[in-house]
Amino acid sequence: MTKDIESGLINCVIVKDLSRFGRDYIDTGKYLERYFPVHNVRFISITDNIDSLQKPYDLLLPIKNIFNEQYARDISEKIHASVSTKQKAGEFIGAFASYGYKKSPSDKNKLIIDEYAAEVIRRIFRLYLSGCGKMRIASILNEDGIVCPSEYKKMNGENYRNSNRLQTTCYWTYSTINRILQNELYTGNMVQGRKTQHMRQKPKSREKSDWIIVENTHEPIIEKADWEKAQELLKRRTRTLSLDTNVSIFAGFLKCKDCGRAMTKKAPHHYYCGTYVRSGRQYCTPHSISHAVLEKIILKDIQVILSHTKNLRQLLDQNYTAALAHQKPSHTPKASQLHAKLKKIQKLKQSIYEDYKEDLISKKEYITYREDYIKKEDLLLSQIKRLTESLSGRLPDTCPEILPETPGKSWCRHLLEHQNIQRLDRSIIVEMIHKIEIYDGHKIKIIYNFSNEGEYSFPPQSPAPTSGIKA
Image (cartoon, rainbow, N blue to C red; front, top):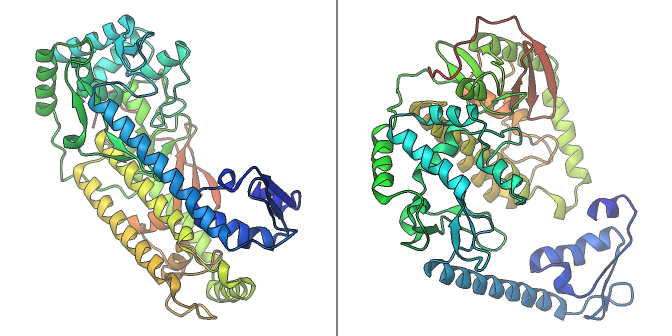
């Protein structure tokens, strides 16, 4: 709707009442008192007898918006209380039952066994207890043509979507087997409350000690003794990651162009598609590239970019002054602009954690990158605090931390600070590059943070290692 308003296609917005327009009193007030008047949009709320064309908004408008928000908060708290009560009573309140179970036709809050999927679960535990590794179990299930949990639910007509799964992944993976082996639900105990969510906030994971676990609520698939043996094996088989592994500056940025999975670092200094390494050639091809070739291509490309920025200081000064001249006080940089950057850093941090959990990077690499991202988070938070400070009319000699939208990108500051880059490091990659996609035909695509893209070919690499063998 806002796009159509700004395009001049809409000049009037009509709602039944204010609560239908919005329950966040701050955002609602922003639209009614600032956004709509600036764009000459008439606002009508029928039951509230509000028409911005006939008369100005009365003094009760902000109060009504506050009441609407408090009503939503009250409903939210009541729903949370009701859900928590059901969870503590051992009732299942999820939208989809875990693989191996299904909802009872007579009671949607009770789980019953899905015999086909339950037999697959039993087989997974039998294989693991007999000495098979998680990747080997995944390979066996894939070879036998058994569909993965997400696909199985779709085949049963469930509108299920796993937000952690890539669209192209329709097979068993290491992480799926790992989750199943650790799921206490299969012992007959109801396990819920792993995450918590408040109004207008993203779900947050809880500590295991805060989970809601109720024993003996449904028929078990796995005997308690077998499940405990599996947990003991999981602890014993946790691989001690080498702290002497060379840290890769590209970790978290390399993606296979075909399957979308992260690239895996293989000995000595090559990267291969993670799907190919873990599941074999039938699911993806190597997409191999050496670290030296990749570093050479990216360094050369960045140097070419820098060679065209001789007058960058003057250009940024002009853009900065022009941006300030055309900005209204209410449109100066706000926290939301920096929150987007903060969200990106947090996403990268999560990506690194997922790579570490799947043994794609070492513990030392994970710790190094995590500390790097934490520092950047702290920097962004300090920038948000400084948003209230007035902005000067010219770009200072030392690049400011807060700039208008166009010249304020962090990559601009990095270009000014490193106009003669001779060697890549982790900070340059994080600042300037969004993603690097590796094709199978000896080609890569570099996607920069400043919306520029480049595709480059590289010479064929040495033969790929045998799939399924970890470095």
